[in-house]
Image (tube, rainbow, N blue to C red; front, side, top):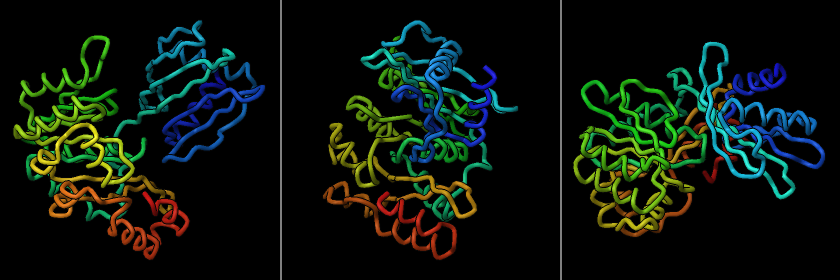
Length: 325
């Protein structure tokens, strides 16, 4: 158990986003993911890998004796004074070899959230002055939830903020935080209906992933709420296409959408992580909703990357890696 705890403490100290415990040939691989990059953490004997999976499943109240069926679990891990939330997913392959994926959810602290170009934050805040829908996209672990929470925090002095998430990733006592529980009949749609009756000023929707949630999100924005949410899309333009795919008519999007932000978490030359946004708003956003011709990254994204290299914030290699988002 000491070896397991040592490995987990090393992983959490590096702020790793995901741990993969995967069978490979006659041993197990521990892979870690950070900022979309997967790397080998270590290779361990099969016995070690199986015992690590059993230990984490036990801690997460999962069925330790079940090795084939998919399971989900959750637990807390303490690294020094910090409490980290872990979300676990396990499944066995056709040979009965079990694999496990662990998502690490770190508490939000202001000193860990940096912007590659701080002026972009003011652009985002300007979008919040109007009631409507502001959507965020980007790969898992790119900081979308952190961005929405940071923005909403600046509105909480005189406004009520309600979040609907699966799961709640950041504990924020100033918000009303609701967590999805499908088994109890508390999905996004049900909680959105409840939320509309609760009359918050601001909604944070963890993920818009089905037509019903998309339409209810639009209805919330139409009824005078400020709504922040995330959508799976490969770039800012793709957010519009995704909503149309989910059945939202461009007519409604033109009425409610005030902004789209695609974001990536990059590593500066000083090894500090920082966020860069690709933003759509104003006439550019309206044109995209009407024509839906945009592809890839905007010209502004390319200019920001070039400026980041010129000012030695990013290495040329790092900037090139994010050239296409």
